[in-house]
Length: 234
Length: 306
Image 1: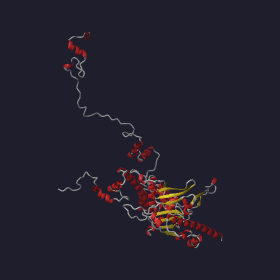
Image 2 (image 1 turned 120 degrees about the horizontal axis):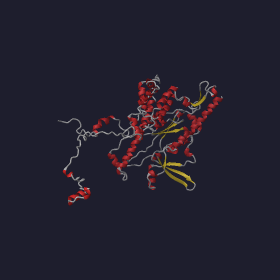
Image 3 (image 1 turned 90 degrees about the vertical axis):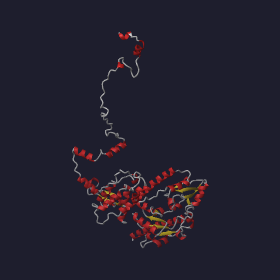
């Protein structure tokens, strides 16, 4: 009986941890501008357990697959400004697919190749691959090498808490190309004259920012109230 | 008569001369912009010149070639995951095709890439076996403190399970030390490190074939000479370091005096008395004053007569 209870305790722990990760993923999708319902955002642990637990009480990651479509505001933000060469630009975003890797260790090129294949076959615009352990360096390279698609990788423990909800993390807002143009005009800047933010920055990774975009960072200041600064993603 | 072949044999840099050769080579992964595209790009930018654009393109090409090289390495890693080609292959005596493939594929690798390959291979072979955690590794009897009992090492499980046997580990690390640390896009044409990889068994066979080392001086000299220390390559390197002079390996200019065969054929004769030389003559057209005096006055200096 003791062994059984220890077993279920461990299952319970893993279930709770994964539930938190799962919720953060939905928050991430909502923050990026995908269509996410309120039910999904506030999924209680009991419902999560009922839906994704296997007979032993452990989470079944193969069932946990998420797809989401971009909202109109997101499409607007990802539509480049019309130019002479491209007078009618299409939004550079589309359906996102999130996959939880069931392997508890040794995630290498094999799993990543399967994931890439899945993303490519189903014609998803973006894919997020979530693993329990770090993936091998060659797998990282392979993941970023899909032409025309964006594949990202997170570890489950990275998403255990939502970093953007921390009180010390200021609010990051992505600017649309139009807003970016206005900003540069208003301050008479070239984009290279803006302060920068790395593409590997945790918040940039969370928001899925791409090179060349500009984020507005709104922080509270004791002396100036709200203070906005702009950073160029590089 | 109609002429066959190219009408201007000297203009070998004409593109059509090499069209057949160029067609055989794979197309580059990037396309160099044509002059028209470059002009169009420069039109909208009054501050930029053709030179700026060329510098930018040069750097872009370098970066692209690095990316291409990394892609090649990634593809080679994926290919090498499938070795050995047959399940029954003996690791000590791999098949010829596998050996050729391995040597060919490892050429652009750095030791780091090789480690990645090993990591990937471990992932593939283990298939979700228990990893992480630690394991006790017991030494042979009598290896403990004070010669009693057994020594105990605590080793991480990853390290224990990395190789199937010590022989395998030796083979793999033997290859690793032969790889070049330099990334492939920085290697130069003469760099043989990394391109001539020997498997452990091949290296052992080679060593056995070589005559057994003796302690005599002559054999040591022979060995040193066979190492090729004095050949052109090492001289080149010494030149690069500035060790030796270009002219003599000894470091001194070699002076070699030889007679000019053409100049020494005519033998100079003895001087002959000419009539104008009776009074001593002139020295390069200058007639000394005393004699001039005699010529002009007809007097004879007393002092001269004494």
